[in-house]
Length: 142
Length: 142
Image (cartoon, rainbow over all chains, first blue to last red; front, side):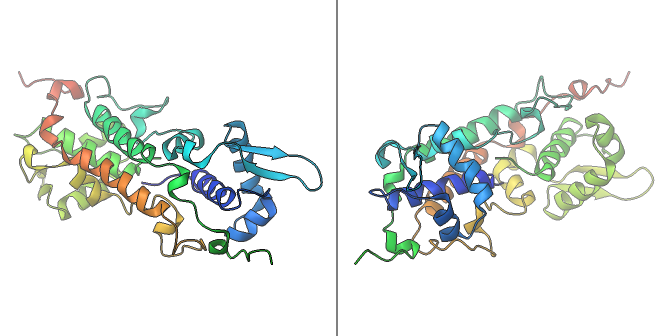
């Protein structure tokens, strides 16, 4: 069982933006900090901007910053905004072929388990996870 | 977020074996019932046998049957036995490269959420899901 890299990277971008809250971050430096591809992070940042978690400042000295206070960003909501689906098994999808689906109670049990997973994430916000810039290898300005 | 097909199929094999509890089932008929590949199901059945959920009777009129009572088969345990890992994000894996791992609190939160997922499954057993043979399209013997 795994989350998509997309969700993983989204959480990392938010963590980095939270650590550098008084500055603008760039995709380039975020990619360098985590050693992940700029192209991936670009898509992630676009989605986080669309979902209202980041705001983009355009221009040469532009960049990204958190659009909400960290204590307002619930982790369950982030994952809801970044996972393409929560199709744990085939019968959660449109192309389901399983013949027992109409009578099967497994789907209900799996949905309940998924609900417990997300509810746990919703008990935490980005504020519970914030690190200092130094923890990303960023030296404090002199 | 999804479970592997392996876990999905394992749960289906157990459901089918539970429906036909007084008989031996075969990989061939189980594959036909669900419209999934025999080769996949063979691996799944081997794993379920190794894990003690199925027992195999060899020979021409052989087959598989549940090795435990359905009310002793907890769904969380089945998924623990069939998922290759629960590596929700990169830092759960051996080849993790994320530089904030030593200080990051996200992993702990995700582990807690995963625990809630599995704990929910553990509140149910195969007995909660049992269907009748007719619900698999099997006609009762005359």
